[in-house]
Image 1 (cartoon, rainbow, N blue to C red):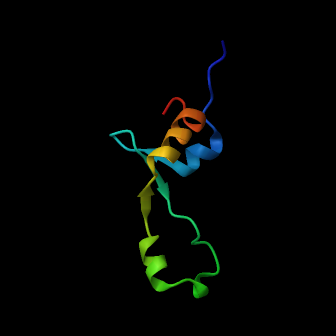
Image 2 (cartoon, one colour; image 1 turned 90 degrees about the vertical axis):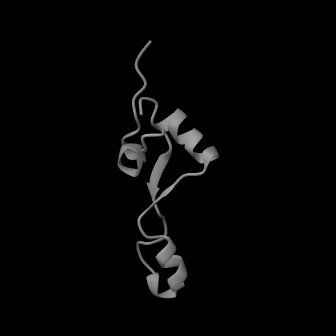
Length: 66
């Protein structure tokens, strides 16, 4: 049985915390910032923790060895 490989795109986008949660950068901050509310831009700074349902998918399918 061959080994499962980590998806190379997922390596760049997700990190696992020490407790096993999935950390990810916020979306929608690349262009068109003038039309976005200031509150949205403030809240989207830095990183966020994925919801449990999404984290389960990422850990099972994209980061099997993570």
